[in-house]
Structures are given as C-alpha cells and as structure tokens.
Amino acid sequence: RTLADAQALKTLIASAHNVVVIGGGFIGLECAAVAATLGHRTTLLEAADRLMARVVSPMLSAHYLDLHRHHDVDIHLGAAVTAIAGEDGRAAGVRCQDGALIPADLVIVGIGIVPNDDLAKAAALACDRGIVVDEMLRTTDPDIYAIGDCAAFPHPMARALVRLESVQNAIDQGKAVAEAICGEPKPYTAVPWFWSDQYDVKLQIAGICQDYDDTVTLGGAAADRFSVLYFRQGVWIAVDSVNKAGDHMAARKLFGAGT
Image (cartoon, rainbow, N blue to C red; front, side):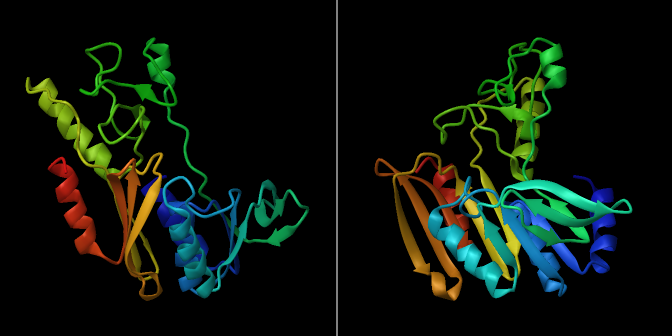
C-alpha cells in the first residue's frame, strides 16, 4: 500500500523460508514471482478457479499458471482461506477451508481493495461501488470532483460505470480535472492501459474487455510472445499483449483515434 510497506517487505522477504501469497491478481502474482526468483519456497492461494480472472481471458490465466509453476510456485486454485495461524506474534501458517495448513513465516495478502467513499457519503454524494462521477469527473455536487481508484465513471469503452485501479488512470484523470478547474472542461475518454511484470514476461493491456464474446490470438504462446484481441459483437474492445510492446502501442494509438 505504501513505500514503507514495500521497504518492510523487502527486509522480511530476505529471511523468509516459506512465503504464502493470498490472491492471484497482479499484486499477488508479482509478489510470488519476486519470492520465487529469490529462491524461497512459495505458495499462492487463489479463491477463484483461475488466475487474474477479473481482467484476462482463460487462455491468459492458463498461460500464467504454467509460467509460475515452471518457476516452482505451488499454486492452489479454488482455495478459500479461513485463518492465518501464528506463534509468538508471527505468522506460522495459512489454514484453508479444506482443513489444510500451509507452513508460512511470511504471508502476503493481495486480494483487492474497497474504495474509500466514507467522506463522499458524509457529504451526501452519490456512491455506487465507488464515488459516482459524470463524464467530466464531477460528483453529484458539480463543485466536487473525484478521481483515481475510488471514482466510478462512465467511459465510452465500458458498458457501465467503471473503476480503474491504475497509475495511468489516476494521472490522466488528475490532468483532466486540472483542465476543468482552469476553465477547459472536456469529457474524460483516455484509453485505459495497464501492465504487469512477472519474471521476464511483460503483460500489457489496452482497452476494457468487459462482456467480450470472441477472441483472436496473434503470435505464439509457446514463445511467450503473443497478443489476445477481445471483441464484442464484432467490435474490437481490448488487447492483452505478452512481450509484444509493438502490438500494445499500436492498439493504444488505434483506440485513441476512435478505431
């Protein structure tokens, strides 16, 4: 969550023997990759039936499952955690719903966030799984804006209000609100893009793949260089690129041009 957390984790992970990561999204997988690369016995527990289920296709999930298992990460899918066992104030293991106790002297929890809308609710602003804003990023009080991970906003590439938890979105929305305050408001339509580095594999995402009904794969998954294009009713809506930066940049340009 913070730089201090990262610095503390760097110290703790250096002396860990059994690392258990709870959560198979970007954060969990990136932490598992670091722990495995450092030579620690690493276990990852994911409650869903596949990795990164909210953001990538089943093909990408399977590819990353193979990638992590190739690096000796012990991945358990459909694993519901019930408790973290401890001894003398330190983690000793993670207990799962099936009764299994997995040894751990370091537990990393990466299971997502809940948007902090307490202040917005206290100010009687509309909230719906985030602080609701319009296409100009204004809340229901036009003198108050909300941006970043907490803001639920309409986007031309999404079918409903969307929250984007990414550095790019927070920065771009900040610029858009600054322009609006300076008297130059315009709808926020920046193309969403994301990335994740795991081992020597870079995943780059452009667009929003909500409710896709077809995919097309470019390149070879076996060589760790491919892209998955997502379509909805024949319209291209997103692309996941693995070690294919050219595909990613081309997609962002095409989406940005309204193609």
